[in-house]
Amino acid sequence: YLDTVCLNMVNDPTQFDVLVMPNLYGDILSDLCAGLIGGLGVTPSGNIGTKSAIFESVHGSAPDIAGQDKANPTALLLSAVMMLRHMKFFDKAALIEKAVFSVIAENKILTGDLGGTSKCSEYTDEICRKLN
Amino acid sequence: MAFYLKHQMPPLLVARNQPPVSIRITNQNKISRYFIGRQKRNYSAAGLQPVSCYGGRHVVTLIPGEGVGEEMANHVEKIFDKLNIPVDFEKVELTSSSTEEELQNAVMAVQRNRVALKGNIATAVNDPRLSLNVRLRQNLGLFANIVHGKSIPGIPTKHVGVDIIVIRENTEGEYSLLEHENIPGVVESLKVITREKSYQIAKFAFLYAKKNGRRKVTAVHKANIMKLGDGLFLECCQEVALGFPEIEFNSMIVDNTAMQLVANPQQFDVMVMPNLYGNIVNNIVAGLIGGAGLVPGVNLGQHCALYEVGTRGSAVHEAHESADQANPTAYILASALMIKHLGLDTDGTLLRAATQSVLSDHRIQTRDIGGSASTSQVVDAIVSVAWNTQQILRNESKQNKPQTLF
Image 1 (cartoon, chains in turn purple, green):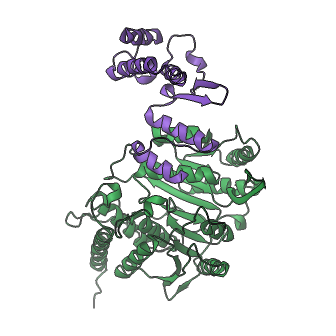
Image 2 (cartoon, chains in turn purple, orange; image 1 turned 180 degrees about the vertical axis):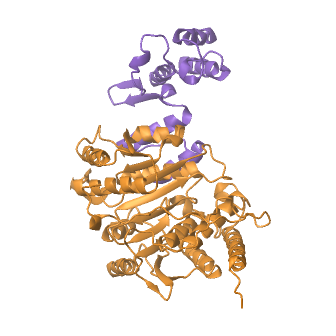
Image 3 (cartoon, chains in turn purple, orange; image 1 turned 135 degrees about the vertical axis):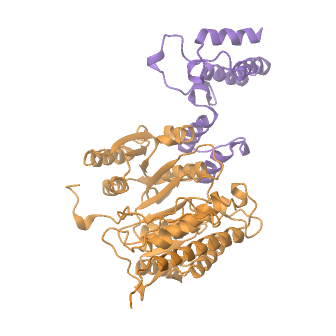
């Protein structure tokens, strides 16, 4: 049941693997899970249909920090990784994902929303360095 | 409040205005530090007195329900018996296989006694009949469901300092139980939102916040998608907010609310919302406090009050391989709220403080919150702590009595 899932998700989200549900519950639960992993700034998403698919980041457009090299590109980057997996470029997707996770795990070069002071371009350069 | 006539005021849990009596805390009994005893009886529902009170003993309807409900009902009866709490239970059996007549009998029993304590009645997904819990609430006109989620010290949780009151509209919305299938494979569900009930719950929420000294009310909705339904609800909340300028009002979309609750729950104070979102938010708040076994809830109407577990029997309470493993805290705290509502202030506070003391100080906890005690062990511990405190209070009041001089 929906209420049981919400209750158990807050205490121990690791017990769940894949969840399928109608529209409204999905809206609420996906934001709930995003809150659990660190917010909308790092959550990827994809919309898949029979003829096409759109992969997007679900955070807002943040007009206050637009154009200042401050934004966190992780959400869109991980959505691109999902897109690569959808297009069956599994190994390339795994490489990029591993690079992103290792930069975040090192905790040295992070953008403002994750608690660091680096710029968006510095963060991206670090990921590129990991890929090489 | 100028638009609100006195006879229309819904019953409220009114905050006590009496000064607390200070109790000496002794280490050997480890009485909880948050126990404040009050000696006077008073009636908590504004303007409503409990009806069934004969010779000082209250009569309350008890609906054990199914699953662990029967076990819990027995424990509550045992506790009340040992602590000499003057409440008698009128037991009414109601299960998922009850007839229409039995449901009406249960409704009449609750209306007669005005106060009830209830376990959950299972609703099978395949059963074509409508949920008995929902029908009971709708027949009794219990329009408000209040769940107070307050962090309990000693229970390991990710967030501390949570103190949220969730007020949920209880009779309409997605639980209107109206569905039809015009074409096979295409089902339409009706979500009904009315101005009258939205006003009623919004007014109730603001009055409750004001009476209990709360600063902020947040309305939870999805009016960007359901523009007419949730839009109407939000509009009613905004209109009522204008009459309470001292209380801060804001609104939040339900998915953002879910995220904020798990990221930063301390920002919320009182929340008001339609039925389904209330179900979800109640369960998230219960999860933040430590589990379904810890949070009680009350359903209030114009004439009746129905006390039950806050999360209404989510599967956690039902899925136990062996008996005697469920967490009785929520049920016992619900019964403590109930006896406070009846006017038995000291007993209610005593029971609540004893329960919190057993959980926090003595650390006798059931499996779902990380301990290893059984239900009976927890209940026995609560009874012994409460009984010892009662004896201490009794001895103190004897010592404080003025000596007669002849």
